[in-house]
Image (cartoon, rainbow, N blue to C red):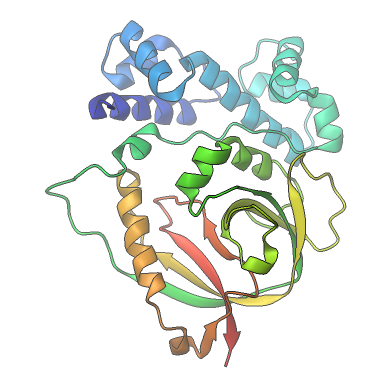
Length: 297
């Protein structure tokens, strides 16, 4: 069973790392954030993230550096130095070991790669925990109609998953990083509930994917599928911001409201068979966001 004081300490270390990724980070500095000895904080960090602090830092730096190489016209050596690597050679070796391609080759062709996308461990271990003396969550639900053009969807299907948690247990958490690395993506990666007509035999209703232009001709990651999505109208739902440690409560509360929402208020009706229901990555600062296809009346 998780020690919640320890998970909070590890999350403080994760937050510190994220904020100081372009600086030298010492075990002593992490210990100050955690409130434990350097030895104890390193042990806790490994226990809850499955990585040593410095392995975690290296993987995160390399992933952030990959995005810079993908999106900006900078020299590899400058990117290496910006992310606190001592040399071009050391950066190249580490990059190739993590992604299977050199920084220069990646910068030229930008193939999909498994970016490291960690999550605050405290939020995960607080799921299902009883909480007392907390203020009520906001019940505000902001709703608007959005028009989507024809596009393609690159996705990795599950087997039996009906939700994000079940999907992560089946497939693991690396899918998101691969999707996030696709340069031509129209938006961020999303979770999806697929209509029956978009599912293949013995695959799950829930999947993860990213939308790309309808004329996309780039690489498809191994094991992933690509399908066409028609132009459609969707109702976009967004809740108020929430504290990250209460993300499971916030999501459950918003989904309950969405499930009972009457689309006729917006002069439309549900069109569940026409396209996937979309769930954006839950991030407390922006609230829970979900979109569902509709017909206009």
